[in-house]
Each structure stands twice: as structure tokens, then as C-alpha cells.
Length: 278
Image: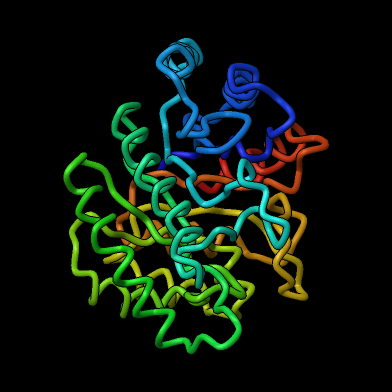
């Protein structure tokens, strides 16, 4: 297994500086934020793409993932990460999320990254049943999964509290209905802990679907707020042992976007806690 850090903790820093800081701490990989200020696909010209590749080569980092979940560039007043969602009642606004995801898949392929991660549907709208929302999500995802397969990368869904798919096991029904080899699960350990999942059991059960892991700590209250490993209640020795038991040998990406005031400190603490376990 290899340890990576997400650039979404470094929203106050340009990409080249972000990569240099992450590499200096000791991480092997970097998760690229497909959003402002690092790599918003809709406005990313060839020059900035070339600069990203050159920075990765210079620092010796590899791409662990492209994070297409956040959409700060749109800056929706409700929540800049969840909206626009795949299940927005307004089809024109829903198209903004769809088009962003399509561009992120293409960017992922251009940069040679393995996959993108995205939201698990979004919040269910007032008056919308869960089944209606799920049917719409499946309808939207099928052509996106086809596009992912066409460009040669994976499209990973990340269950999250308060969204359509909250628990990791809810991913299975979606996967069965979309039925695409390009679709996979991004298992976010902190989110699963928030939902009171038994982490070792969930890791084992979802192993056939999991293509990438996000790691962050969560307080014992199980409130969804990302903390550096060591500051919450998750037993990472147990988690890493459970992941290893599945035979997974890919990326474990630390995601600490709330730590923008001192991302270096958060990244270093996470590295010091997790590296000995890996």
C-alpha cells in the first residue's frame, strides 16, 4: 500500500507549492483537486496542464486520484461541495455536475491518473423520494461510466453522510444497476465511521468493489468533520490491518480539507501516525 495526501487541504496555496510541501513530508502520492485553485477542468488550458505534469515529475509524486467531488468554482450558496448534484431537480443545473464529471474523467486520462472520485448522488430534494433519486442517479451515471471506460479510467463513487448513498453497502445496489467495469467504490473510512459501520467488516465486505481509500479521523461523537489521524476515535491499526487482509495494495489517500490554516502540520501528523502502520 502507498500513502498519498489530497491537495484539497491546500486551497490557499498554488499547485506547485502544494506538491512540493506534500513531497517534502514524505508522501509518495498526491490526490489532485479538480477544482479551483488547482485544476478546474473547464478552464484548464494546455499550459497549466503541462505545469502540473512537470511539477509531479520534479517532486517525484504520483497521482493517487483526481478529486472531482468538490465544486468550489460554482460556489453554490447551499454547500459548495455537494451542489450542484447528480440529482438536482433542475435538469440544466444537474447538467453542470454531469459536464464537470465528464471533463474530470478526460483530465484524469490526460494526466495519467487512475481514477476520479465523485459524490454519491447528492442530498435528496424536498418532495423527491429516495427511489426516484436513485433511479435518476443510475440514469445519469450510465453514460458517464461508459465515457470513463472509453477514456480508460475509473469513476469512483464515495458514500457520504446526508447524501443519497450514505453507507458503503448502499453502493452495491447502484453498482449492480449501472453494471459497468469502469465504476468502483471510493471507501472513505471516516464517512463509514460516521455511519456507525463496523469498519473491519465493511472493508472486507466491500473489498470486491473498492478501488481507492480515503483516510481521516473522526471524533467519538461520529459528527462528520475530518480530523488528522490521531485526533479522533478511529483505530487506524485495525483499519490498516483489515485493508491489508483484503490484499489491497493501492493508494490510501489522506483527505483533510478542513485543515487549510495549517495543512503542513495536519499532513505531517497523519504521515507520522499512518506510515508505521503501512
